[in-house]
Length: 418
Ligand SMILES: Cc1cc2nc3c(=O)[nH]c(=O)nc-3n(C[C@H](O)[C@H](O)[C@H](O)COP(=O)(O)O)c2cc1C
View 1 (cartoon, rainbow, N blue to C red):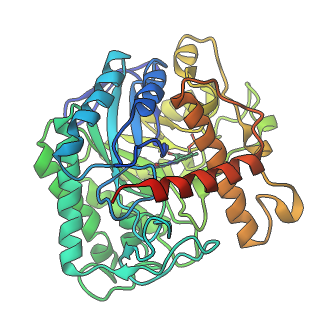
View 2 (view 1 turned 90 degrees about the vertical axis):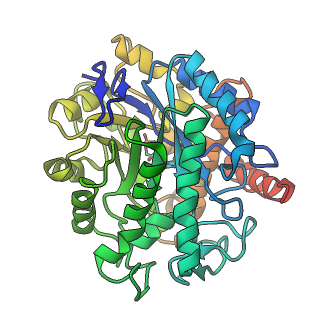
């Protein structure tokens, strides 16, 4: 039942099974610190009744962002602003976990034209990403230390947990993938080597935060690209995670080359009495549940009460991660927990630049990329509205959202103080 509580291996309790999954907010100030807009946004979500709010990507290194506007946690100067953010969530009745992350090669040119990655494999996507530099041993040691430092700082600021982002083609996911990790040293080659960085990061984070603090990992079920991290490899990594002392495993999939997690089933398929298997990664989750010893959260596509309840009842997942619906209907959890709501909005069919050649299924990689940017921009725009205390705008055009997103992120990148 979505209303049931869950106690994690570390002893920490979640009041129900609903989690607002991570969505990068773009609301940090020019010093990459949390702002009043971010507090307003999370207060709205915290009042929704969801047991858990996961922050968007919080970056561990100011030089490498997933997007200008990311919060960066590098040293204690950010702690007071982090504390205000966590306090706002607690006062509104929820808990806040920080998703800590390094973008690797998925760092836009405007932030850094020479990102850091396992190997020099450039992301070719509308010219937005520079050729990465291969991480040295010293870089890798620094990355591990930075993850641990960031975890310790968010803990000191009163956050309730931390999630290590190892999905969606960011740095840890790049190390896992033989497509982006071409190394021949102990960090590349066999899966055991490709998974080493993730396992060392988890160990360093756990050592920093102690045994009673929740540590989660977000992992791809598969990269869904040729030559990428596969489902079989992901299953093996989960076996290793069983011994790594984590409290929650969040399942997702895809990278910027194939944004699998943006898929949803069409609105007219979301009929109250049908589709019990709307969530995208459930088949994989069922296999994972057979090997995973920690609680699992599936994120991606959950849109009906029936779909959520049947995934919990069938033990395919222990937590329900939901992201996009929080942008259009920010207080849905209480209504669903009370039985007043049985389905969430699915506007994705309308968020496209056109049909045919211009549509999301276009055979042109550029058009598909632009449609994905448009969808991200559309949701960023709704997030900004909520952060400004305004209502969401369901009728926003995809083209308008795309242009605004590109314009605003460029402005943010130039305004950053470095
Ligand atoms: C605007 C936007 C921003 C996102 N930012 C992040 C992020 O910072 N970290 C992350 O792990 N996933 C991020 N995601 C992916 C979501 O967490 C989630 O996996 C995906 O949207 C599928 O879930 P949903 O169908 O409930 O939206 C983002 C998704 C959207 C739409």
